[in-house]
Amino acid sequence: MKSTQRASISPARLARGLVLPALLYLLAGCCGIQTDRLTDTADSLERIRDNPAGLHAFVQDMPKGADLHTHLSGIPYAESYLKWAAEDGMCISTTTWAITPSPCVDTGRPVVEILADMRWYNQAIDGLSMRDFPLVAPQFGHDHFFKAFSLFGDVSDSHKAQMLAEAISRAAKDNTEYLELMLTLQSDPLADLAALAVWTGELESDYQALLTGVRGRVADGRAEVDALVAASRNLLSCDSAVPDPACQVTIRFIQQANRVSSPQKVFASLIFGAEIALRDPRVVGVELVAPEDAGPALTNYTLHMRMLAFLKKKYSSLNVSLHAGELTANLVAPQHLTSHITQAVNIAGARRIGHGVDLKSEKNWQKLLATMARERIGVTILLTSNAQILGVSGEEHPFRAYLDAGVPVMLATDDQGISRGSHTAEFERAITTYGLRWGQVKQLIRTSMDQAFIRGNNLWQTPGDFSRRVDVCAADDPLVDAVSPGCNAYLHNNDKALEQWRLEKRLATFEHLER
Image 1 (cartoon, rainbow, N blue to C red):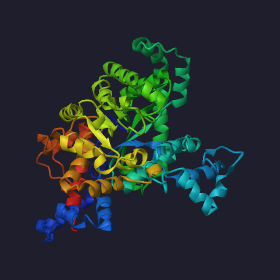
Image 2: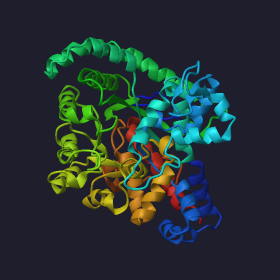
Image 3: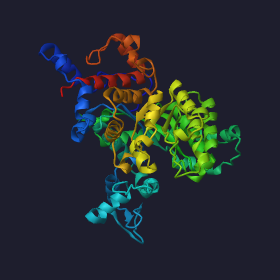
Image 4: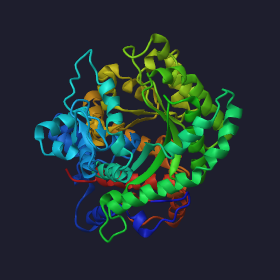
């Protein structure tokens, strides 16, 4: 799983998912299958649009590109956390549903007993997720959703390899080719460093005070990634004669900082992310997580944006993706709805934002949209999450505003284990809610890989314009296994172009399937 910017392309790697395209091409040439007999994908979508089973099958089989906004700890379903807790002999409260180490106290019972009692088991799943939560206005799932992370925290801390294996297995079943997973590397050591630091608010001096200690954790951070990836690959038998299909999913990590922590802890986590990203291509950027409406997050929002602006000057290649605008008037006072996305874009220099729900409450929001479109600052849209947490859906959601303005838009899952969702479900929801046609769906898929923080040059001459590939690969046919020497060399030297080429092959295959 470990790679570098100039990773070698083995024949097996280049041929991932290419057997079917090659067979289709050969059949078309030698066995009388004409292209006009292959059902047009756009027409297929229109025929099954109002058929839930048909639409699900179509979207399930569809290549989805990249899931760029997803939290590692939020991906496993409650059933997985309960299984791991039972194996570890842990306890669970039958009132709060918090999973804790043994011995069991107060309302705690051994998880293994809960698994044997269907009534308690179902209540535990409901307590640890959004399943059956009554999403009826004015009650929405904000508190229930975010509380879940603390309930299974003791399990997630000790089962990261199983979590990663589940994440990439789920991606493979969803036909998602690439994941950027948010997690906190070196959490406890960085917290210890921050606790010893005196915060002055003068970023240069605070940076220098933290830098030596943070740099001293980078080697351990890389070792943490090594161990995590190796253990998950072992669970999936990736180095065996019969590897799990999930082993073909490309994974990268984003170092997250908890925005409700002390300023010095947030800064230490962000500095660490910048430092490790310089030395390990598997870590591709930084993020701020936790509820954006929490008191410390609101108080320190501009300070956090200034931290990131400062680090962008120190680390010119630093990729910043930010939760911004995950707010409504039900959660915060009006003054907090006017500038969060704008600050993420104009101060922090974010290359992507996630959520962006309060767009139309931002000052000069049309100008903001124009800036994002012009500078290709993307937005990951989390439809299920926004409906459950914020109570925002349908035409109240700014999805169309971003799309119509030409902002790079992607669909992502956020926390599919808690929301009981999937990448497939996000596309189904977008298609049915907004009447998307195949061309728009394909644009979302391609945009996700275009916006990914993958090293190397682009497959497309102009990012976001998917009509013209770079000259060296322009004549190559995605449905043919063989790649011209010039294109092969270009893919060899550019991981981003390689991932985009893989996606083009899968899209071409999907579009040529007979339906």
